[in-house]
Image (cartoon, rainbow, N blue to C red):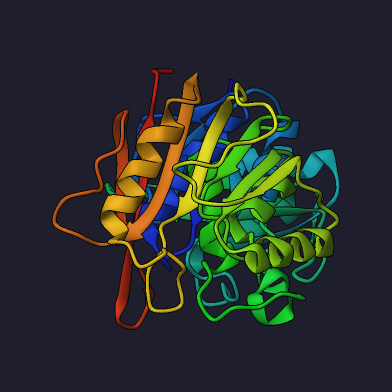
Length: 336
């Protein structure tokens, strides 16, 4: 395993941290206990060097993946050795990505790198190094191994899709939910409250096989249009009440269930109380999870979570809109 860090955004810190750890687990790694505490960094490990790029490509609430290089008094000599390898470099401090000219430690790193024969290029460097200070005040040097495309989610926003509805989970939060569920390529993923297909789209983009249910045929048709927009196809989408309808193969099992519980006036619940409806649907379909299956339920914040079979690992409140808070709950059927 290769240890490193993910710098997370501060949009939803608790969800961002859980997403980073879960996405690393989906790649065969996971979270680890760091020897030091760094602000805005989550310690993870992955099985090989290529996995850092894969991890960055999955994340919605991260900024970059970083590998430890040196700490304290070892930083200057390490940088001179790094410069001997060749290539230009840029130096920044975590939390200050656009500056560094007034930071004496950042400037000292640049001088050490040039002393080793390297060059500084702030615009298009071959390598990017980041300084971070731990809780004890010691400096640590990290190298960026992969960066997160922060604009990717914005290109999947609802106003840009062929089928649009006012109530839909934003793509960043939908991808975070899919990462919480640790969806892996070729795994069967179910959304029993399909809606516009936002969650299944994110699951498909990381390689999942897609199954969905909605009682409104127009929503199913619209979700198909949105999936097609992303170059995705569903294995099977069903129209009907998720407590009763089934797929062509009634023995089909799922590695992950990821769903956004219906809420608001625009949701179609057949006039039924939403908590009771969601509880019945979760009870039914959780029985079709594989032994190591995961279920992520996004639901309105409440004093108690909606009862779902399995072990509750995460329950993270996130403010989605100014007056709306949703809870991202991960339930695990088995244990890793």
